Length: 149
Length: 405
Ligand SMILES: Cc1ncc(COP(=O)(O)O)c(C=O)c1O
Picture 1 (cartoon, protein in one colour):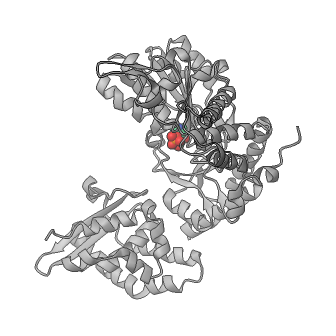
Picture 2: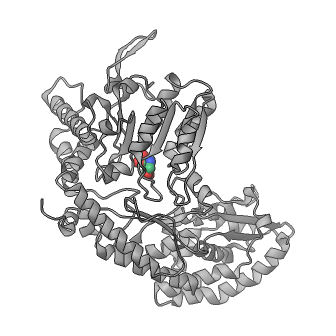
Picture 3: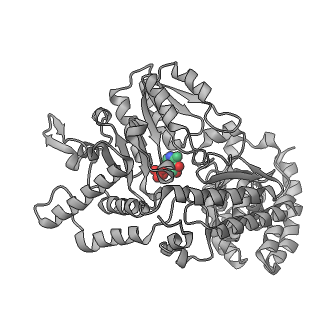
């Protein structure tokens, strides 16, 4: 498995999440349904093979371990990420984050405001716990992949 | 003495009136404070606030008296031979660091050994490790039995290596298992070791009798004993406290200073640099006096009942792996939902307003030994009720249902 192959599997999953699941989460009547969808999201992303989970890809600041891989299409200046997490709820939340950032240009990524976006999606409550679940740490790591100007 | 009335006990915690919807089962992390403690701290600031040991004025003398009374009450709680053997610190971690650092500079020599156990909290591992590397001291570790208690046969064998210091916890903060500390101290003493007990979880379960245990050090934190945060206790036998090099210097701990030489004040002040946590000490003393109005045995019985109900409820939920034993357990249950990450379980409990902790609970060596990525920890206190137990069980059932759907 290569990063390119993982990306090829990730992108259609993200598209589906964007077109369908985000709406399902907003429409969920109770927290149980919300969490069920959230955990399904994580499952849609391809798992990163154990061999590829190198220590330098580990994102610190998460209670559960999470890994981030980055691909920069320099010709078009587009950033793509693949990630995995041991915990399912966190992986679901990270999948939503990926939907928002994958394909961004360097300038867009630099401006990306996770807090604002999650607020718009009514997902802000999940961010309040993010110091524990590592969502903020992941967002910072993603933004740090922007090439320095 | 009348029977233990959990509702009467619980009513003294304003927290539960403010947060009636929460089931609080994170008591091993920190406990709630009864009104008696909150009042003692408030009254100190409102009526007596002054610095201690240094005032020319009466207010300072009063504050000093209250602070020293707090020391006496802690000394009585642990049955220290003398109140000078009670050093106030900021917590168990600070006390452990003071002991490790202090002994390392005086008592321990390169090639000496320290004996710890596999289930220690990082606060009873890392301070030793920090100094061991620099001073050429060797750490040995007592393994566990299949029931996850300290292996006493292996312990006896490791004592034959003649460790200078043996340091272990009274109660495991992850599993809740009560260690046979009296026996462990006696065996360590017979092997000629200095003994240190980490009572962070122990001091609230059982009033420690340091003279009967005959341990050289016993440490704990106020906030896990119904007291304020930022206050802790380092009990040590005078003989060993005198051997400790202070970690911090400055303030009342000093006798005379010149740029050539400094001489130190006597115990306990020698180990209390700077302005101490006066309100914290007074709050801790209030917690102790308050707690002593209740019968420890009755409280233990109440907690045993909660545990029994919890264990029997857990049997009925599928896919639960329990890491803690129900016997010799102080009220902590570590568990996992088979195949699921503890963070997911804890988050689903959080959604149902059941507060537990998940992760490795500052005891990574224990988890690598158990070959688990972590655990959900439900820790009970005397103010928890059968209703709390049932709500936690229902929440767990719901979590399992969502996770395994
Ligand atoms: C067994 C044990 N030792 C030491 C500590 C450290 O206590 P504190 O954080 O209050 O210094 C704890 C608390 O988490 C503990 O449970």
